[in-house]
Image (cartoon, rainbow, N blue to C red; front, top):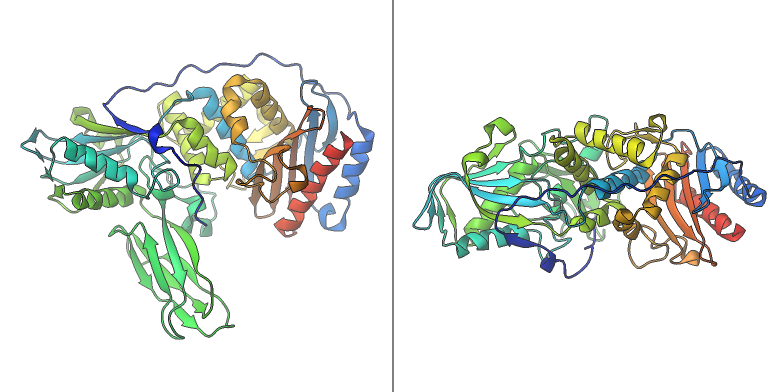
Amino acid sequence: MIPRRLGAGLLALAAIVPLAAQNPRPANVAGSYAYATSAPANPRLAARIDSILARPHLARAQWGIEVREAGTGRTLYSRNAARPLIPASNLKLVVAAAAAHHLDSDYRFRTTLYAAGPVRDGTVEGDMVLYGRGDPMISARYFPTRTAVLEMLADSLRARGIRRISGGIVADESWMDREYVRADWDAYDLRWWYAAPVGALGLNDNSIDFRILPGASAGAPARITGSPASGAWTLENASRTVAAGRPHTFNLERGSAPGAVRAVGNLPLGTAADTESFAVDNPARFTGIVFREVLERRGIDVARDPVRVVSDPSASTVSAATALVEWRSPPLPQAIGPVLMKSQNWFAELLVKTLGREVRGEGSWAAGLAVEREFLTAVVGIDSAEFVLRDGSGLSDRNRVTPRALVRLLDYVRRTPRQEMVRRALPLSGAEDGSLRNRLTDLRGRVAAKTGYIGGVDSLSGFLTLPDGREIIFAIIANGSGQPSSRMKAGIDDVVRAIAAAG
C-alpha cells in the first residue's frame, strides 16, 4: 500500500534557503468558448455504448456519460450528462486544475525553523519552533529516506554552529486549521493512509508503514515493524499466528493511548509479507517528535523532551521569533503528480487547504472549497447546480458532479497553457506507472484519464487520441452498481474502446 516514488533526481529541485516571501503569481484565464449543445452526432457510437451498458451486470448501475469532440465541442454521446453523480477520485481533477490556476508553477511549500530565543555560543536559548505550511512532500516518495528533509534541516542548524536547544520543540501547525478529517468520511477509513489527517505539519503521508509477517510458530504474535521508527508511536501487539489455512483476521486499530496502534486478529503461517500504512492520530505531534529525535541523532541536544503542539494562530510565537532556516519543497507540479497519477488523497486535501490559505487567508476546507467553487463557476463557466464539493479527493460520498461539468473542465485544461501541468500528470493507458498502467493496454498511450473508485462508484474521465490526431474528451461515471469494481472498470474500458473504434 506504500505509493512508489514519483521519480528520481528531485532532491536538486528543493533546497534550504534564506527566509523569503513567496506569493502566488496572478493566474491567467482562458478565453471564452462556445460550447456546443447539439444532439449526439454519432448514432452508431450511441448504439455501441448502449449495448455495452445493457449487459446484465452493468444495467443495474446509474450511468452518467458525456463524450465530446475537442475543438468543435460536438456531442458524440450523452447519457444523464447533466445529472450530478458521486464522482469518487475524478473529483481530483477539480483541485488539480484550481491549484494550477491560482498557484505559480514554481510554487513551493515552505517549512521554517524559528528560534524563540537568542542564539549564543551554539545554544538556542529557548524553544525551537518547527513551523509547517502544508508540505506533503516530506517523505521517501521524493527523497532517499522518510526523514531526509528533517535531517537536512538538522544539518543546516549544525552548519550554523548550533549544538543545543535549551527549551524544547514546538510543532506549530497554526498555518492551517485543526479539522484533520471530514465529518462524512467513513470511520474505518480514518485508520488508513488514504484518509490520513490533514494539517500544516506532516511527514510520510502522515502514516506509519507497518511490515507484517506471521510469527515463527503458531501461537506467537505476528512480527511487525514500523517506519519511521520513532517514540511518536507505540505498538500494542495482541495478534496471534495460527496454522496455515486458518482464517486471516489480522487488522490494525487505534490503541489505548495517544500514538498507540493495536494489532489484533489471526495471521496464518505462510502468509506473505505485507505492508499496511496506518494513519497517525496527531500529525503535528508525530512530526515534532520525529524531528526532535532527528536533531538528537545529528548531535543537537534538546533539553526538554515533550513536544508542544500549537494549533491556534493566536498562540503562535513565530512573529516574534528569529527565522534560522527554511526548507522549500519541489515545485507544484511534483505535488499534483501523485494527486492524479497515483490518486493520493492526502496530497489533494492539502492542496485544498493551501488554496484556502493562499487565496482567502484561511487554511481550511471551507475556504479552499470556496476557492474551487469560484474557479469552476467564474473561470471555467460551470453552473453551480452541477456540483457539490465536500472534499478535494472524492473520498466523501456526498460529493456530486455532472459528467458534463467534468468534460467542460477537461476542455478548459486542454486549451489553457497554465494547465499543462495537470494534463501531463494524468495517467496514461498501458504506461509503466500510474493508475492506468494495467488498463486499456490495447490503446497504449492514447488514453490520458483520471481513474476513480469508492464503494459503489467507478469513474474515468479524460482524453482519447484518435489515430488521425483528433482528441475526444469523455467523462464516465457509474453509481450504485452492486458489482465488483473490476467488472465495472472492464465495462468502462469497453465504453472507451467503443469511442476509439467509432473514430
